[in-house]
Amino acid sequence: MPIKNKYNSGMEDLTEACKDYKLHLTIFLCVIISEYIGVIALEIAGVNIVLMPLLYALVLAIAFYITKPFEWIEKTQSEESSAIMMLLVGPLLVKLAIASGQNLTIIFDVGAAILLEQVGNFGTILIGLPIALLLGFKREAIGMTSSICREPQMAVVMDKYGFTSPETRGFFTVFLIGTVLGTPFISIMTSILAYLIPLHPFAYGMACGIGSASMNAAAVASLSAVYPQFATQLEAFSGMANLIAMVTGMYVYIFAAIPLTEKLYDILEPIADRIITGKNNTEEEI
Image 1 (spheres, rainbow, N blue to C red):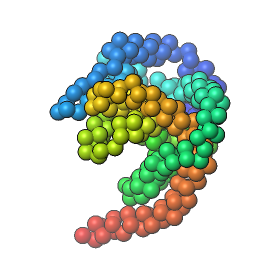
Image 2 (image 1 turned 135 degrees about the horizontal axis):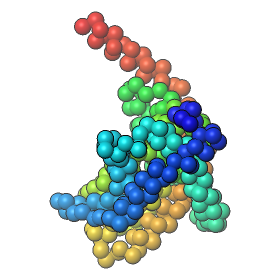
Image 3 (image 1 turned 90 degrees about the vertical axis):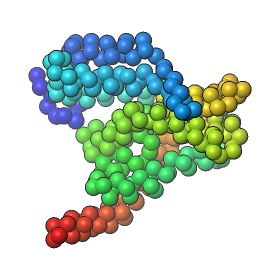
Image 4 (image 1 turned 45 degrees about the horizontal axis):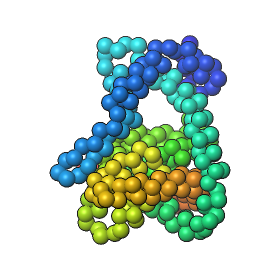
């Protein structure tokens, strides 16, 4: 039975997707190969780049999809994966909920100052949203720029806007790009900043905890190469900061980031549309 809607995950779609054993075996093979390869740390021109199994799994899955000899992975399997995605988000929600509940005392003990850790995430809104609108994106820009588009925000976007929405599609676009480019980028950036800006190593350790497990691991690996004498402390600081970012990040995202993004979208979208329309008209006249 074909999937009814490319972005819809009804019970019938989910039932059919769960019966596609070829899809499950293919994904299982990708996971086994990726875990067997493991974490690879590369040093290029003094900069440490960490490659995570998640990256290999994504590349392998894309290869199975686009390579002609593997005919059992086609558009139908891609649509079935969209249906299964809603099911797989469940364990993630449980994990985040348990982590949030167990560590609420940490949030209250630290106080309002902990919210300062989330201020940096607003850069994605203030900088990214205008750029996305000028590139021609519409409602997709809200999902793309309202956060760093990692796991803690995923469930919020799907619950608020729905899996079929342009906001969710925009979110997953950046999520996939972040999976491929995020870990190499943060590895390089961490090494460069550690050399250029003389902050305390522990401050950089806390800065590594942005709410993404893969990016956190990559950043700490690079930072530990710069400060090997503080490797253990850096892991501790980054781990706690990452946990705090995941726990508080959802609340900041729900009550501050999304409303701010939607408000700025309402203000900036007509302006960006006039700029794009005027540019297109000028090019047509020429």
